[in-house]
Image (cartoon, rainbow, N blue to C red; front, side, top):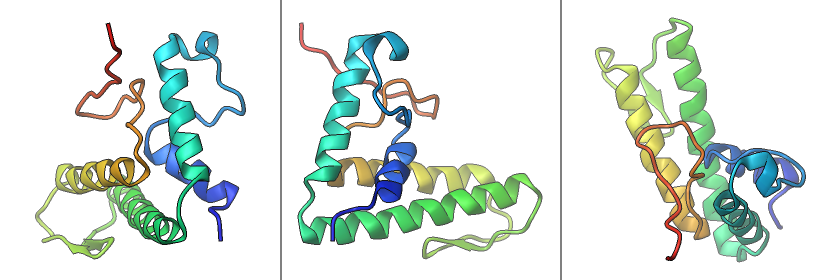
Length: 130
């Protein structure tokens, strides 16, 4: 079954893309982001059945880690997220590092890049040909 619209929006959010209905180069600042956004959206629409299952599993991990990050920000204790166990003394930076790794894995799965406009660390960008 193809990814639902909510799952595609979740994937785009985790990759740092805007959730505008029709992003334009004017609204996003420069043309490079429009192409990267288009590639990510099209690749999510053209997943194989096996790929859909893998992407759904990755989205569950990312959503779980995001919830854990929110809990830590609100002062709750965290000991596990997305199948990864943390010692109580580990900090939010460790959870973010795991989130970033899963984010990169999602980008690899769908053959797209993380948004060059994303404010997440480490900074990434689309390499434009000369």
